[in-house]
Length: 266
Ligand SMILES: [Zn+2]
Image (spheres, protein in one colour):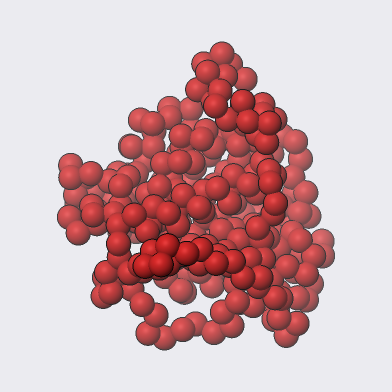
């Protein structure tokens, strides 16, 4: 690690839970941020500031004035720009070290399955060599169909991912890690696509709730990469800004779910 990087990341390196090894793991990691809206804004910013090696930004939307109340990676001058372009400019300004790739694209299952960052042999075996960093997907999409698509591709490729959602005064975060034997998947938690799910455009969203959920997603992505503290995979955490309460729930694996067959056995 170069001197300027030692300085930039000194407050991470000071933490015994991160140290130089942890910071190097962050700098080798690839994180795919799907959705650059309210959740994706803090996720992309904190991942860039933290020095993640490769940040892959995916969103097919453009910045609108109504986004700016909560989507803090964008600003008034970015209205009309693609969200990935706007977010990439800001993240690159925060940290020029980070390699940023932009896809102004909807992360549907066809597109996800075509990406070779998802298909390394190491990831398939659940083992990442010391030269190749971990790849983690952070779902910030606010779209159930995309979540199921991410779930399927992560099961097939044996990759961990962090799910997040927020609407009105409520949010939730869950971590799924198919590298762990018997781990639940998103479909174990939500077996069927729910019709009539709440949306921010119809129900509103309190601005900082997406910040709380998004920054919690970044903590979980860094926990997966660095390995500090207690693993949170297989838990759903919910936040209610009305009461101020967090709650944590264990997500049991469904024995009838396809994730419990042979996906990650190598
Ligand atoms: Zn499952």
